[in-house]
Structure formats: C-alpha cells, structure tokens
Length: 160
Image (cartoon, rainbow, N blue to C red; front, side, top):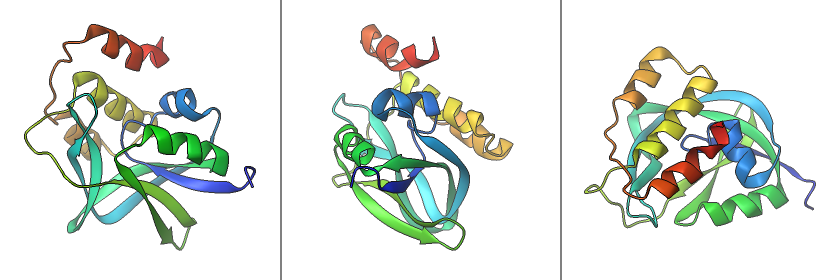
C-alpha cells in the first residue's frame, strides 16, 4: 500500500522541491499545472498566527502549481504538516486524478504571511519557471517580519 503512487498539486510553500523533500523525502517532479477556476488566497490561519496559502473556487482566476509523484506513506507524513487543510481530489484529462489541500474554515483576513513564508512560495514558483506575470503577483503579496528569528532560520535553512 505505501508503494502506491499519488500525484500531489503543490501551490504554496511546498512548491520548492527542497521544501517538500525536507518534509517527506524524495519525490518525483511531474511538471506544472494551471488550475483554472481557482484563486490563490492567503486566508488560512497557521498555528504561528500568520496566514498561509489556500485556493478557493472562483471562475475568474487560475492558480499555477507543481505536480509531484509521492507515495501514500509520504502523503500520510505530509497530512501531518498540512494540519488545518483537507485533502481535495481533482482530475484533469492530462494528469488524471491528483490531490491538493484546501484550508478548513474559519478563514482569516486580518493577518498576513511572514516574509519567510512568502519567500518559500516565490522561490518555489521561480524554480518551476511560472510565467512572469504570476511571479510578479506573488512578489507583490503583502507579508510581515516574523519576530521569532529562529523560526525564520529554521524554515529557510533548506536553501543553505
């Protein structure tokens, strides 16, 4: 059962393979996907008090993400990191069945992500060569400094 391969659609801090590998071990990158009828939001309240990425249905938007092949055992590990999200199974004609995470209510619009979180998302999107207009949109997202310097160091150590 743990050898079963699943396709994971990452759109937030797990976009960069270094981040994903630091959480679940080696995975296989399958490419990028433009998910239509969804909008990227920063409305999932994290345990640290900042907000995290979420995607919500919206017919006027799209979200870019990366597809990774992982095992069911790796998904179980990832589920623990993604507390506050639910698995959502999706399908498209090219890739077949895949899953992603959608935030559970309540949502938060009064907080912002930390700079280190935004860095993870922007570097991940850049790694996958998302279109310049999408990278620009991500770069323009508001974020705030994390007063806990150790948390910043811990989350960005994957790039050292």
